[in-house]
Amino acid sequence: MKMIRDRWRDIRASIEQDIMDGVLEPGAKLPTEPDLAQRYGAGRHSIRRAIAELAKEGYLSVEQGRGTFVHPRPMLDYTIGARTRLRRNLTVQGVAVNGETLGVEQISATEHVAKQLGLATGAPVIASQRISFAVDVPVSFGTIYHDATRFPDFAERRQSLGSITAVYASYGINDYLRDSTRMHARPARTPEALQLRQHPDMPVIVVRAVDTEMDGTPLSYSEVIWSAARVKFNIATGKDAP
Image (tube, rainbow, N blue to C red; front, top):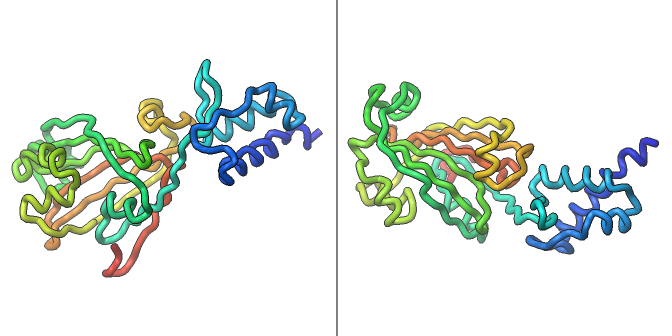
């Protein structure tokens, strides 16, 4: 009885293996539920459970009225060290990286944001919301805060120059360091799952970070939501860590 009840695990493992081996390529449409039931000699309940679990883990995308498709699922290695750079992390892996601005506004810094940036509570800050893609799949989105007095046109320069490193260079800041990184995992909220185009039961990783100039002066504070199924974080240690 237990073997029948757990049949879905074998089906899930078989489909996952086909995806990992390239038998089922990204974008491929899975056979219909009856066809899968016949192929695996299992009931529809087992097929549905296996597909649901694979969707939760980001392997499959279930589209109402269209079918079930193999989801593009880049697994990225993201190194967090003294010099943490999105493009440098991913382009060396041969991953095409791009991003879009979701919104920019000048706001009054909350007590928390002000503390991270070394400002007075209520000081003007630029809040830039962006989403990042790897191989055209959303991997993260969030907000980065800058002192509006010091970087009044940060968002415009980012749009023009393409990277944070280039923007800082345009202000005469040729190097900067990661001062602190804090992260924790939690269940995705509905808007986050929609933004990342992932199953609502797939978790996210919340990363809060402060970057500083070489002398320790704060440059930015960021709060970014990452898809837990699409990134592995590596913590680099030592003074020569990237």
